[in-house]
Image (tube, rainbow, N blue to C red):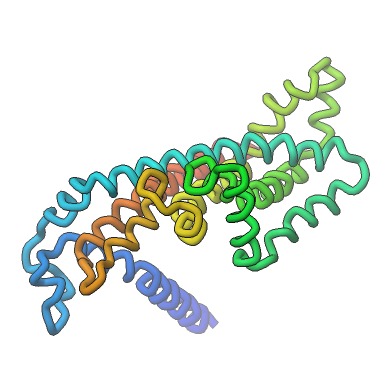
Length: 277
């Protein structure tokens, strides 16, 4: 019986290792290609590891004024979309889960159901609407387009966290004389922080790496984001894979670092929230 359990554990670990290799291999290949000289990139047979490490690809991409401008545009769009998504979804979720007595859950289901439609259904209506109000090919127009996706999902995610908070805590606070705003700030938000942070991560990641909306609604370099500019690095007759991979590595850093930091915060929060017997 013990040997059977060990075999199951061995195969489980083997599957986890295989899955990790399968998931991490593209990122490892991307990083290795970004530090290869061009001769190693186009060499045949394939050189899995560079014979010599070079940072010329990063220097070239970071010296490109268009790429730096697109990075700034991506940062502005992502921060604004994340801020507005959380600033609007938190009170909306609180109202639908606490203040609306009837129909709140149905409204949340309707909000989430709006995301079931294929994105291409909204391409033309958004284009016409943004053009009508003069926001086509602008950063504010791109922010509005992203909010149509992030705001409903963030509202649902925050509402799911709020439903897990016992209403008895809020009722006890009201008995002590706390108003709605103080209850939200001192009780609801700290407890629902993991769900709110998750919603913020979703909004940031989507707006940082989104490609289709940015390609359709921005045509000038003044408003283009980094994923769109990476498309133009492909070239007409050849692809500069080394610079393309260097740009991809740089674009992944703003996503990878927050995930690592937030994971540690989650662990700390779970430890601090433990109940001592």
